[in-house]
Amino acid sequence: MESKIITYPLLFTPGPTPTPEYIRQAMAQPTLHHRTAEFEMIFANARKNLQKMLNMSEILMLASSGTGAMEACIVAFSSHTILSINSGKFGERFTAIGKALNRKVVEISHEWDTPAHVAEVEKALESHSGIECICLQICESAGGLSQPYKEIAKIVKQHNPNIFVIADGITAIGVEDIDTTYIDALIGGSQKAFMLPPGLAMIGLSQQASNHIESHSNGYYFNLGKELKNQRKNTTAYTAATSIIIGLQAYFDMLDEKGFTHNDIYQYNTTIACATRKALQAIGLQIYPKNPANSMSVVVSKYAKDIIKILKTHYNITIANGQDRLKDKIFRINHMGYIPLHELSFVLNAIELALQTLGIRQFNAEANRIFFQNLRL
Image (cartoon, rainbow, N blue to C red; front, side, top):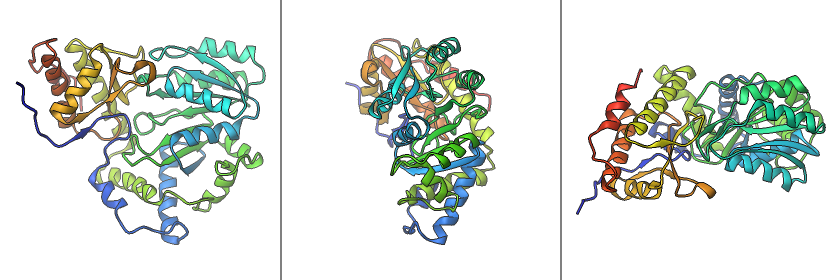
C-alpha cells in the first residue's frame, strides 16, 4: 500500500494565494486607526503604487470582494442597458448583477473554453443602440481563459467613445502588463497576484470614468463618486480594510527590496505558465481553454477529481476543482504571485505520481524535465 508523503501544505488554488512571511509580518503589526495620519500615509503610498502599476488616472480601494467592485461599476456606469461577455462563471456574474440591478442585459455567451470575437461585439453594439457599458473578464478564471480584451475595448471606443469599458482584471492584475488605453474601470482583488487575504477590491479609473462618477453620484456604500472625493484625500468614505492595505504596501516594498520591476514579475509569470503547460502536455494531459491565460494552468480530464484528491491526501497540495458545469471535469493550478520554482516542480511531480497511482502512466519525471527545459529566466 502506497504511504502518504508528509510535507508542509502547498496552496495552489487560483485565489486565495499563499501570503508570504514578509507580508504576513507587516499585517501582524498593531492595528492602526483608519482616521490617522499614520494610516493615511500608508494609504497614499499604496494608492500611488497602484496608480503607477495600472497606468490609470485614478485608483479606488474598497473594503469588499471583487464582486462588490463589479456591482459598484455597473451601478456607476449604467442606468438601463449593459453588454455582458460571458465565457465562464464570472461572466455569468456580471450578467446576474446587471439583472439584479434591473438593467437590460445584452449578453454574448460562449462555452467556458472559448473567447469572444470582436465581430460579435460589433454586431451587438450595432443591434442595441442603448448600451451604456460593456463588462468582460481579462482572464476568466473559471476555465483559465484569456479574452481578447484589448481588441474588444478598442472596437467599443471606435463605435462609441461614450460607452464605458468595465474590465474584470482580478486574476490578471500583477500577472500581465494590462493595456488600459481603452479601459474605463479596471477591477482587481487582494487575494490573487498581490498574495493578500481576501477583502480588498481596487478599481482603476480612466479620466472619462472619473469625470462621470463625480457628476453621477449613485448608490450608498458602493458610491464611487463619494469614495473618489474621500480617497483623493487619502481616506475612505467608510471603514478601510486597514491591515490588507498595509499588506498591499508591503507587497510593493517587497518588490523594491528585491529589485523587481513589474515587468520582471510579468516575464517570470509568463515563463512559468508556458513551461507548466508544456510539462502537463508532455505527460498526456490536455489544456482546457483555447486561449490560456498565464494566471493559471487548467487541465481537462475525466480523472480531475481523483487527481485533486490524491494531491491533497498524499502530498498535502491543494489545487482547485472546476465550478458549476466544470466541477470534477477540470483542475486548476495557480501561477499568480511569486511562485517559487521548487514548489511548482513539486506540484508537477505530484501530478505525474498521481497518474501513476491511477494506472495511467508510469512516473519518469518527464513533467519536471520538460518544465526546466522550457524555463528561460
